[in-house]
Amino acid sequence: MFAWIAENYITVIVILVLAAVVAAAAVSIVRDRKKGRSSCGCGCSNCPMSGSCHKAKK
Image 1 (cartoon, rainbow, N blue to C red):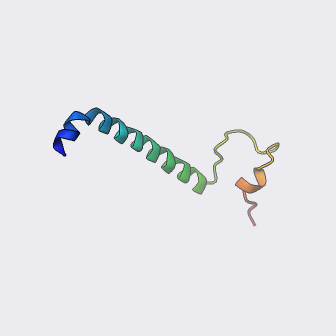
Image 2 (cartoon, rainbow, N blue to C red):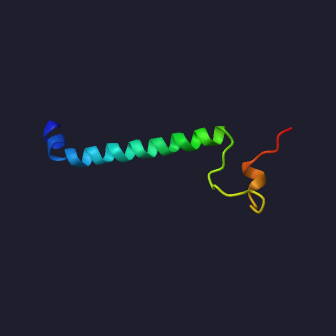
């Protein structure tokens, strides 16, 4: 087991870094959704999906 890790430590490090980047992106998307922010960054006046991503407040 240790021999395999020693032979492939660069690959293991790259996989760990990529997993951390994906996890950080997912956390950011979830936080933005909870705060009601849109991911597109443009105005919603002409967007056909504006009714589904921004629920009307009652």
